[in-house]
Amino acid sequence: MLEIVASKHNHPAGAYGYRIVEEGKTLVYCTDVEYVDEVDRNVVTLSKNADLLMHDAQYTQDELKDKRGWGHCSWEQAVEIAEQAAVKKPALFHHDPEHSDGFLYNMEKECRKRFPDAFLAKEGEVIE
Image (cartoon, rainbow, N blue to C red; front, side):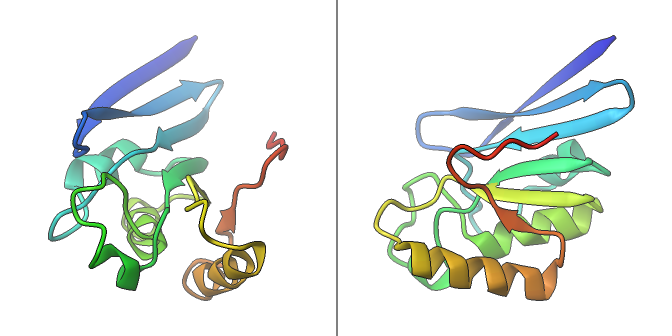
């Protein structure tokens, strides 16, 4: 049996996160989300104990200062969601197209300092 839960979150044009559970495995897909002063408790609840959390991580915390209202969050906020929700593995995506591969490689290294199983999703990657 497949179970899907949708949860609306903050984005200028509106957006939803999804929790999909099948055969005891949980995937949470959360893109186009912006946190104003702190991470959204509803996203933490949606992500609780997920096997895989695919989460928007377009910017760094420093870049967010100039990107308020654009509808995206930082990799630091995405990792915070994963930590608070006790996620097994966070896959960070929705990368800024202006970030180089080298920049993203370094971002992934920084993510793993906080959450060793975190990784940046890559084009063509398949996760089973």
